[in-house]
Image (cartoon, rainbow, N blue to C red):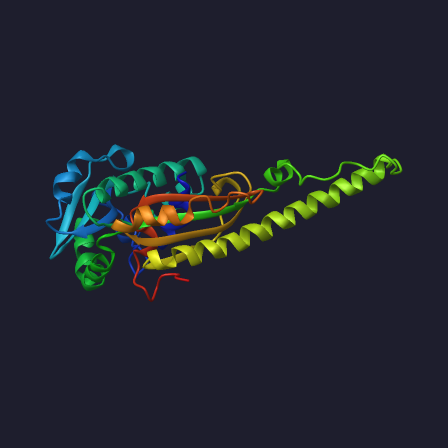
Length: 296
C-alpha cells in the first residue's frame, strides 16, 4: 500500500455524521451505492477528466454537482460497501491495499488538473442525491478549504533510524588494538558486542530525533502548515529502520524546489539516519478545517 496514503489519508475530508450505509437504509432497491473520492470546484475540469478514470471494481467515474462544488464519484456494489461489507474488506490486507491504491490513483489523477479535497477511504453514500445533499450542507466549509489550499501541495518528510546501517559504518580511526591487551573470553566478547549494539541503537535513534527537529526548523519558512502523523511501523513502514518522524507539510507550488534544497544532504555524515521526502501529493493531511486538523 502506498505509504503516503497509509500515513496521511486518515485526515482527509469526510462527512461529520456517520455514513449511512445502503443496507441500513432499505432492504430493497438499487444494488449500487455512490463512492466519493474527492471534491473540487464546479467547472474546474473534473467533468472532462472523470470519464477517463477508472474507480473501484472497474467502475467509471462521474461527477455529482451542487452549487459551486463537484464530487468525483463511482458506483460500487451496495452489499460489498455496506457497513458489514466494508468491515470485511478493511480487515483483509489485500482488499484494503486494493481499495487504497485505487482511491489514491483517482485522487492523484484528478489533482494533476485542479485542486481537489481527498475524501477518506470508504466514503460511501446511498446514492447521488445523498452526495448532493452533503455538498450543500458543507458547501461553505469545502469552499473555504479549497481557497486555502489553492496553489499549494503536500510534501511528506520521514526520518528513519537504522542501527544496522550505523553499525556497518566505518569506525573512527584509532591506533589499532593494543598487542599487550589480555585475550577476551568468548562470553565477555559477546557481552561487549551486545552492549555496543544497544549503544548503537540508542545513538541512532537520538541522532534521528535531533535531525527531525532540524528538519522542522529548516522548512518552517517554506511551509504554510505541518501535520505530525504517527510514525509508521511494521508493514506500513516504507523503508529499513525505525520511522522516528512522519510529517506532512503544506508547501506553495513555487517553493517545492527550495524545500528539497533545504533538506538535501542533511543526513550525510550521520550514521544510521536517513531522510525521505515524498510527494508532491494531493493535500490529504490538510483537507479538514484548521480547527479539526492535527496540526503541530
